[in-house]
Figure (tube, rainbow, N blue to C red):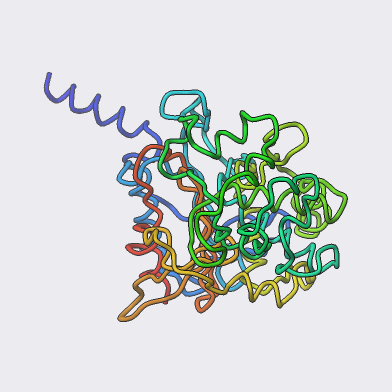
Length: 379
């Protein structure tokens, strides 16, 4: 009887996804989407260590990871997708139906969207729609002149790009399920731009960092005012089309206002394209999409960040973070989003890492996976 029970349990275990079977690495397929592929070994990455990371995802040591992609030396060398729960804001633990994610799945990338907004501002500057990032924010909103005062006169686009506007904002103290959260209020009030611009200045612009989706959503509307195109249409023409990105969904605060700070849906392969564009100084497949000058500004630290788990410094909607590597350290630029969405750029290693996930109420394992498995695998 005990032997039969053991065999039954063993058989059931072998039927579970990712259980009982060692992981077998496969080189990503070339699909004509712009990605050249190669094997891990060809670019000097230890396949065995990466396989261990995948096995830890499968056995739920690292739960709710939906995808992991690695680009090295300009080639897509690793691409794996996992099962998980779709994001549904109104549901318990923000988890909707279970699905097997794959390379064709659009995934909500949450605040990684902010990096796309930042790049869109840069393209608007490159194209001459915006003179430079030092222009005054209120100059773009004459209809809200009654909300302007001396303390707000000096707020510039760069302050919005670096989250140093100084405008009072409360996005981290309250849950995203709590209507006291200022970001959630944008979806409730009749005029979200007025809601943001009416906030008092509580810190001199440029001197204090605070996480503010309000700053980023002002940038989205500034793009519209400067170019005459809603931000999603502008990004489609000047960013997505040159990258060969054809499948995406933007979120909207209301029918007229793009949610510039979050919830863009993309396929992970396309997220990796964008990451490589920034890493590669604004060039994709020999075509310059973003100027070298703006790419350099994107990689520059402008202010210290009081959120060291994310990064020690903050730039144009990217964190700068130091990771242990070998006997020393390595610098990374990264943009993260709620639930475990992330792009990590390692300029000195010529490497991009992309995660998507569903850890909306739990610990996010990305940094540990990178520190324990991915970086030690890079020779």
